[in-house]
Amino acid sequence: MVTEKRKGNDADNLPPLNALRHFEAVARLGSFAAAANELHVTHWAVGKQIRLLEDWFGLPLFERRARGVVPTDQGAALLSDVNGAFACLSHSVTQLRHEPTTRRIAGIVRVNALPSFALYWLIPRLSNFQSSFPDIDVRISTTSRKLRYVGDAFDVGVRSGPEHAAGLASMTLMPDVRLPACSPAVLRSRPIATPADLRHHTLLHSTTTRTAWADWLRQAGAPGLQGSRHLDFDHVFLQLSAAVEGLGVTLASLPLIEREIAAGRLVCPLAEPAWQAPDYTLAVNTERAEDEAVAAFVKWITASAAPERTASARNKSKQRPRR
Image (cartoon, rainbow, N blue to C red; front, side):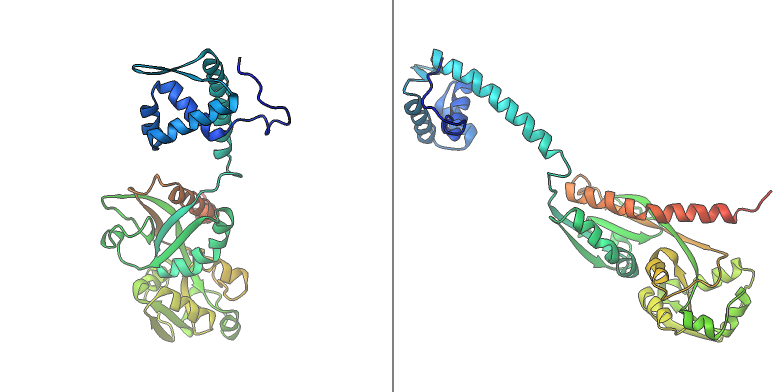
């Protein structure tokens, strides 16, 4: 058995740990040169660590032979203990690394989203993600172009409607249900009890949703109805901002105005019909899908959208005709 070098607490009785690592590699591989190659150090550095360990114990740990080295009896006994200690340490480290409360995921996630979605839905919720994953850097860019024209400069994309292209894995994120919405002041000035009352109001439009009002009015049984005025905007987020400021009535995506409604900045005077626009789609760059940071973001955003999916399903069940 290896003789005890000194007395004291456990830390005082431990030999140099880096030297033990070199010792284990030499004993397992039977060669200083092979150990040096595995540990990415020089042959001289391995020899120095072994001499340090032998000096600490005060006895030789290897027999030098023509084709390498073999442990002495004392070295073999030490190797058995070292292997057991390393196995125990490896098990503990593996468990800790897989505990979500102790292992922190780090990395970069590049998100390309619709401007209105980024401004009204994603950014207000992003602090929740950063609280859970402080070491993940989320970089947001916006465009309404199809993701196949964006190239590979993103990891996760959010669009309206399906996204099919090579290198993309797509899934439905949440439904896009739309209803008329306006500021409380607009509603007080001219009540809206039926779709026909919209003829007294300014209707707000955006370039990408120019036909939305016509589709909704057709479903509401008032095709061809015209508002008193029409205001057009380049972007949906400008259209929504105009509604908040009392410039008219917009046909709004309910997921995007959830916080505006909760804060009392917008109201939905008509509860139906709830027009179903193309679903919001989540697309993941398949080359980055296995990255831990990207996977964490995808899991978070799908969980965050779950209440919207549940609410949409509930609304659909309410609107089904009774038999």
